[in-house]
Length: 226
Image 1 (cartoon, rainbow, N blue to C red):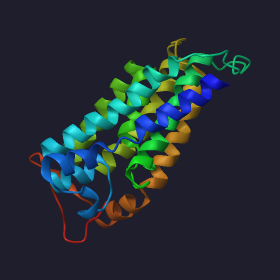
Image 2 (image 1 turned 120 degrees about the horizontal axis):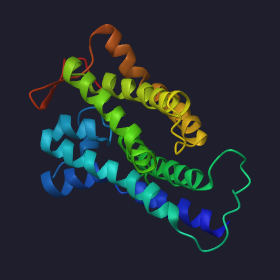
Image 3 (image 1 turned 90 degrees about the vertical axis):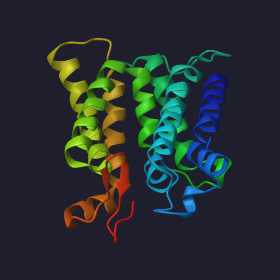
Image 4 (image 1 turned 180 degrees about the vertical axis):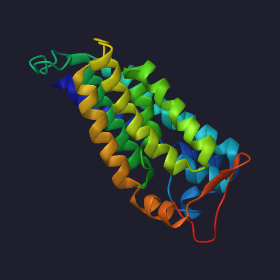
C-alpha cells in the first residue's frame, strides 16, 4: 500500500507543475490565466502567447503524463496489493493510477492555486506511456481533424473517440494481447470526462463561434472563449 500512496502523491505533484504558468510568467511576463479563456492549458497559452509558447506548454503537459505513467508507476517500496484484479494486468493498473493522479494534479494543481487545465495533453502522455502504437493512431486522428477543421476542441473530441475505438479494433479484431482491458475501461471513462469538460466548446461549435487555428496562431471570433 505504501508504494501506491507514494506513486499517487509523486504523480499528483508532477502533474501539478504549472507548465503554462511558468512559461507565461518567466518567458513572457504574462499569466495566461488572466487572459483569453482564463484556462491554464496549452490551448489558451497558444492563444495568449503564440504558437511557440503553446507547443512548449503542450510538450510539458505531455511529459507530465508520460513521466508519471512511465517512470513513477514503477516505484516499489513494498508489495502491490492489486495483483488479484482478475483479467486486469497489475502493471497496467499501476500506470493508470499514476496517470490519473497526474491528470488530477494538472487540473487541480496545488502548486498553482488549484487552477489548472482540462487535462487532455497530460492524459495523452499517460496513454502514450501505456500503449504508444494506439496513441500514435490517436495523434494522427487529432492532427487530421485539426488540419482540416482548424478547431482544437473538435480535434480533442475526435481523439477522445479514436483512442478507445483503436483499442477495441487492435485488441478484439486483431488480437493484440499486450493491450490490457483496463486500458479500454480507462479510455472510455476519460473520453466521457473530456466530452463533459468540453461542453461549452461543443455548444460554440454548433453555433459556429468556436476558436479556429490559422497559420500557426489562434484567431478568435469576438464571442469565442475556451
